[in-house]
Amino acid sequence: MLRTFKFCTEFTTTQFLKLSNLQLSTLNDKIENFENVETSLSDGVLNIHLQNGKSFVINRQTPNKQLWYSSPISGPQRFNYINGKWVNSKQIEIENQLLNEINLLLIK
Image (cartoon, rainbow, N blue to C red; front, side, top):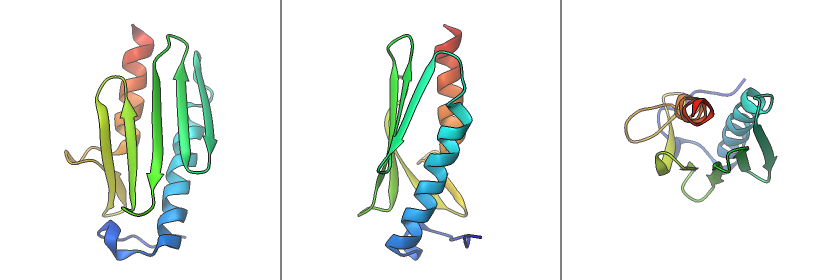
């Protein structure tokens, strides 16, 4: 089991890679079976393509120990690992952000 860190600066690059890979895999697993959505996960980059032409990209930024997020709804964001969660500057978890935005686009 992975240790919970208070701030992303408290862990090593190896720990960051484990935490970021786990989060990317979890996100991929949650959405890969959605209708009208295709995903690919490779080398720390999760690409999500919706049938309506919209796409999301989430990738790890090892030097900054962040996950970078690009969305057709909210634009670019950076997520830091704080208190055991990947959160943006508004303290929204990356999973909630992604799932809410995908659902908005699939409803349209």
